[in-house]
Image 1 (cartoon, helix red, strand yellow):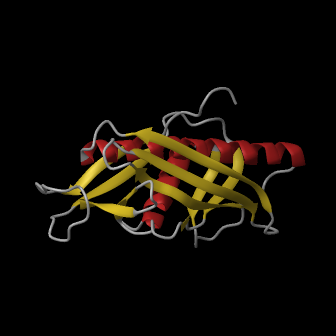
Image 2 (spheres, one colour; image 1 turned 135 degrees about the horizontal axis):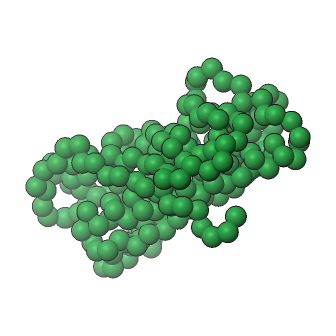
Length: 212
C-alpha cells in the first residue's frame, strides 16, 4: 500500500457542558462536560468476502474509565477536570471500531461481540490513549492499538499488528487537547481498518478459498 491510510474523520459532540474554570486537572467540585467521539471513513475500498466480529477491547490498567487521561514524564497519571468521555474507554473504543469498519472497510459485514457469528474475529488491546506533557508545553496525544485477527472456525490467530498515531495539541486548552485526541484516534482507526482489510484480503488470496 502506497502512502499512509486515509484518516478516519472523528466528530466531537459535547453532550452536556458548563462554564468550568480553574485547573484543567481533576477536581470533584467541577461541573462536567461529556465528550462523544464518532468515527467514519470517507472512502470504502473494494469488497472483501469476509465477515468480522469485534471482540470487546482490552484496555491498559489505569486507562479504562471515562476520565480523559494525561501522563507526565515521571509516569504520574492524572485526569482533566470538568470533562469525561461518553463511557468507559473499552466501550468508547468498541463503538469507534464498529463505526470505522462499517463505514470504511471493504469487509462483507462487521458485528459486535456476542452476536451470532461464523467468520473472523478482531481483538484489540488499547495500550495508549492518553495525552502526554511535561506540564508546561501543550501535550501530545498518543493512541496505540495492538490487534489480533483470528479464524473462528479453528480459533487460530492469522496475524497481529499495531495501529498507532500521535497528534500534538495546539495549546493547553481542553478544547485543543480533545481535538488532538480526535485526530490521533482517527488516524489510528484508519490504520486499524487498512491493516485488517489487507490481512484478510491476503489470507483469502493465499488460501484460494472463500472465508468462512
